[in-house]
Amino acid sequence: MARLILHGYTALMKKTLSHHDSLFKKFLGDITIARDFLQIHLPEKLRQLCDFSTLAMESGSFIEPDLRSQCSDMLYSMKTTAGHDSYVYCVVEHQSRPEKLMAFRLLRYAVAAMQRHLEQGNDTLPVVIPMLFYQGKTSPYPYSTHCLDCFADPELAKSVYMQAFPLVDVTSIPDEEIVTHRHVALMELVMKHIRTRDMLELSQE
View (spheres, rainbow, N blue to C red):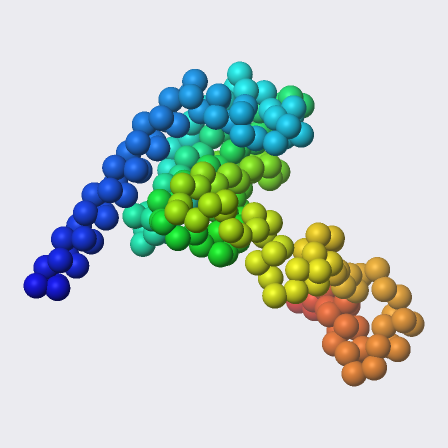
């Protein structure tokens, strides 16, 4: 009996979530409604950079197949006022319980949209603005919307990810300096001059 009730509840929930998904996509699939939605809810600083007359809906989804019963997504493209490509990626969370690491998930989806942009033949990254449409039971939304707050040490994460990555360019380090690099000096010298050695070997063949 309990199993039948659970099965019935699960089926009802799937039907409800499917209805929510259809409703979400029906409304925000209309460009006029989507434009109003973005003009109202995007932060003012971002709104000023968007050319809403170029807004268009893009196909595809970046949500993992096993999570599509819990979330829906919509991807829009538009030009910035400077004429650059950009996207707005909107996710609606159908779960009654919000996900603590949703900011990280949105970042992953935004990066996936950037990757697809590159695969379409572009050679620079577009700005992808992630948005979450929340309708859960807990109000207001209880978690941070900043991906850095997903880390155990947000300040350390900020110092690592909000600046240029460390670069070891041995081609620009003088040999005299490399030989002072203790146990790693030999490896660095070999790797720095390996192309020269390869060229010499090729010239002797």
